[in-house]
Image 1: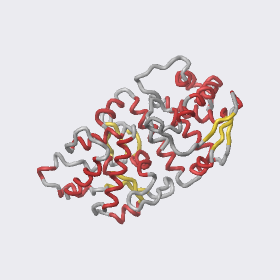
Image 2: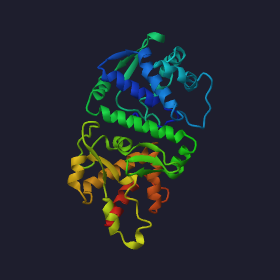
Image 3: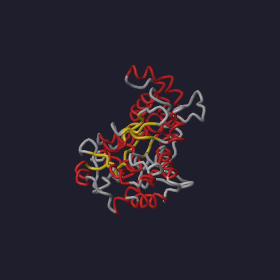
Image 4: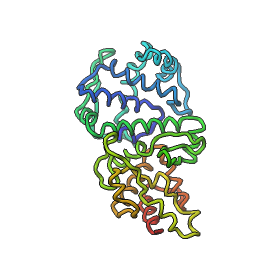
Length: 322
């Protein structure tokens, strides 16, 4: 929830999430802020070499952390660790900005129900105490899934910041390369993220069919067409130009490979239709860049100014086509 729900004008939250998961996976109950700042800063400078880490709308001041990161990126990457100037900037900025906001959700006053850390002490002696909740998830079977979600969300958000690509994501949405199961932007056909990593968080990490957890890196995973692609041939000939694209994000869901094989070519059950509608509602209620893609799907089917809750109606309408 911390990663998926919340407006992003910069990517600090993703870097902090990476650093927190790494520290907690080692079973540590506390870590010096200075030590936590190392993976935080290094992940940001690595991403800086790939895409913008801030919305193009704003300008960075000379002392802004991202300005320091840009100046120190090459040397930090050469060293394999942050320069003293970059580390000092991270130590100063983290408690003042991202660590204050990490638990915030979209909407005034909204927060996640847990605290994953507490910052104590002063100056360079500050200590970050890692909560039991953070240690539990970082050492669970869901940890690889969480890391995958975090990476995918980071990639999609930074792509939305990029000139050209960002404009394409906002106006035209994304498409799916079914040969690689990669989400790509329509303008440049640049790979942005994998389908599973991008949407599984909105399924709460669960298989859409059996509702058991999916463990990335452990379970065999398949991306299911909730409404089978082969059913396209059953559409009335006059409706195919306006019919929904069954190869699009709205109809694709991560599942266990075994569940997907057993489902085969059947239509979704009532429960599965509810789950895919609920997941799509979640994406549209978030500031996730994939939201625009789902809005376009509804608009294409005649919904004006589409609302998230209209996914339940839309899914029923699609079922009525077959």
